[in-house]
Image (cartoon, rainbow, N blue to C red; front, side, top):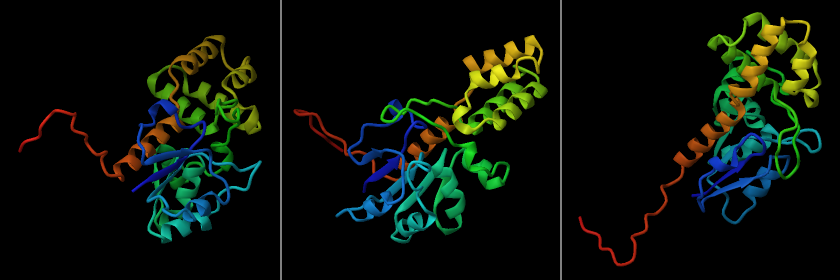
Length: 229
């Protein structure tokens, strides 16, 4: 049994276990699942985290369902994976994480909520996903880091920006003067020090679920040591 996970900036590479049966590929695009199914030995588990959607055709539900029909475990989280998991959940794809739950519940429904830009190859984020900002504001208000009204002003300004322009610094510049100096300082401090990265948290949760579906690594008995029951 083997697994393939498609991921980009949402997955922290240091959280990926060193396993020969786990392959991490770049963000998914149209044709990638078909290519996996065409392998001599297709993977038994496919996880989708990040995906391409502007510079390339995005992965279609039809391609996802083709893999499900062949008995492959399909899991999605965080970004494109969460979107496709919501669409394909009735047919066997499994969603993982808080962002998937937000889409499934209908609390958010726009694709731009998870959209972001990043440096190719390095996956260094150049913008902040709207959905991460929503979870961060929710956490900040809950912790008493800033007022709820301040969070609403922040989210309204962020949503008004085109997704490649969404960064915390830009939003903070936009709302300067719309909130008090003290509140501006408080929300800026929270984002600089305590804001959660929900996309990455969900990606880590998906990776853990993928590993659970794989057999445990074979144990190796050190040379010169015996084994007894």
